[in-house]
Length: 424
Ligand SMILES: C[S@@+](CC[C@H](N)C(=O)[O-])C[C@H]1O[C@@H](n2cnc3c(N)ncnc32)[C@H](O)[C@@H]1O
Image (cartoon, rainbow, N blue to C red; front, side, top):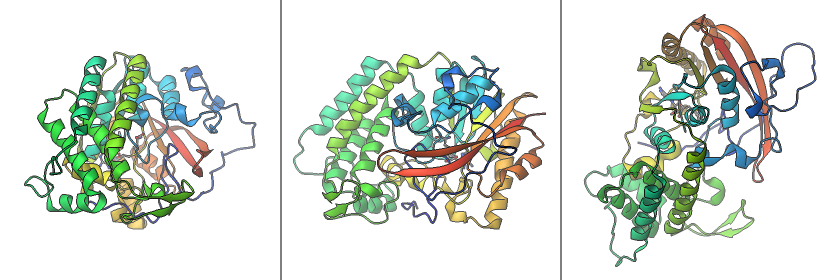
């Protein structure tokens, strides 16, 4: 059973500006104080760029939000992604076009999407069905005329006035779990739910070629149409049924009764994003699998760029509970590494280290000697040095970067590490 998350510490290990949290100390770089180079322009990085010349602590003005969320990177909100420019730096430094990068924790697909832009083939795995759906929708090759026709066709059909009866699939009908019916009734106004269920039924019955993309539009609209306060979209605790003082907009707001306006808004936005990505993508291939990376033998790859889940922080299933219930996605919550349900104490940390090492052992087995395993993590508990020792990798460098930006609504500051390991 999925619940909306309630996190003791909602601080994400990697963040694209949609997270929030306390400000842990940034680990200082070892050695004497040296003058920081200028913030790195990812496009200028080459295999010859020395690691010491990199400054990855971009400020808001170096890397504004629209650049961090370009094209399909913001097809759908996702808490805990890393920023595409960070991936770009390491793809340019360590991978050549035609090589293959693996991300065993693909998440929203940042590594895979960025790899394709640079002509690098990509393979991703994730245990969360919604994340795999999102990756596939981002990476699919679209016939732009056809995708436009389908997105507008379903929108026109869902907008037709109904006669007041529930036009969509009945949430109590067989096929919907009892808990799904309970969740959907609790978190949506009946009118909004009727619109969302109608959209879902149309995806199932109209034979669209791009059903995955339509499901992402539906999920994004559902997220916005929940009965939640505007400032609580990430971690709502209770349905918001009446008007409330909105900290985000500094006025009284009321929960929405209408999902159609979001379906319209995100249809337009999705078409623009898909078209923008089509302009920069290459012929490189990408594949995404719904699997538990602890139990996966990966195919041959040249290296890895990934940001693993962290211990006791984000429940990646609960984050998109509305999508699981609305789309009937397979839930594999028990297979999530580091899930908050397992706690964050010493036993959970040790289990986390074993499980992350297990995944990376499989990844190393798929890589050639000299290949890089690059891991981005806000390792406040210092769990990664022991993981490296367990794996027997050569430590080429640990880079630190400060993340400090204000997106207008939220300020955040934290540090994260980039572990660059070589397979001996
Ligand atoms: C920090 S997120 C990755 C975010 C990604 N770098 C991005 O930019 O979107 C970690 C991911 O690991 C996935 N995960 C957790 N346990 C897993 C497992 N056993 N096998 C595969 N994926 C897993 C989670 O579902 C989550 O999507």
